[in-house]
Image 1 (cartoon, rainbow, N blue to C red):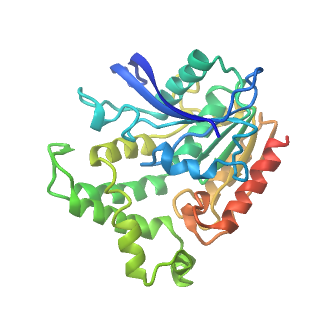
Image 2 (cartoon, one colour):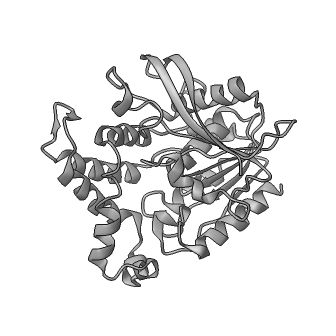
Length: 336
């Protein structure tokens, strides 16, 4: 499989907030070969705290996304430590939105590759929110979109969940004057313990499904997974991405002026909504509500992932049942 990691230098960018960012950088990796007609492109944006290496497991000849047929591009979301982020920016990092991210990703595709059509935008969690933004903002460019455990805007309950995560992290004494002066060791662990209760379902813990991954006890699972999950990332980067997530709304831009129905109706793509049946913060009911508003879509289907893995059903590393479900649904979507 041919793969290349590059940095797209976007230069000076005026953000949605009006702030001018002097030297915006978008890190990305490509997999496979762009066809002569440039019609085999899949865009696969990253999720919360993830970098491309964390999500590329899904790419492979027998995977959900096949690089022998498609040219797959993973753009790293701002704030993930590879693209422009608090941790790698000399100036004070400004407020950044999904709309800003999609604008720079669009420049990458059009300016660097000459791409004008996307066969699919596929994303999980924050990646799914980006897929929704892409479909609304560039309806003539996006042929299909798969929104996996994501939504068109951050629901109030989802916002409150993020407030709890943020509060656990910033309670660490390393957080001073609105930013982290050093690594918040206790804050990372507290954030992970809060997240563990939200990310997985009641049934996951009731049935001790963590044993399937080789953990010997509940504490072993919490220590080896959730105590370390976020410690690998810069804490100021995590806060920047939480801000993007909490303010996510496809209609929050000049094009739609806050009209959520109009933003959803603008979408023309074949839409596949795949919430996790037991996801606690990207709730199935939000996608159910969105489904009826996708009046301009070529097609729109709701396929909840029948899993006890909660939000993680949409990122099923080491979980062959949920992987098989995703693979079959995406194959059907690409066949349209």
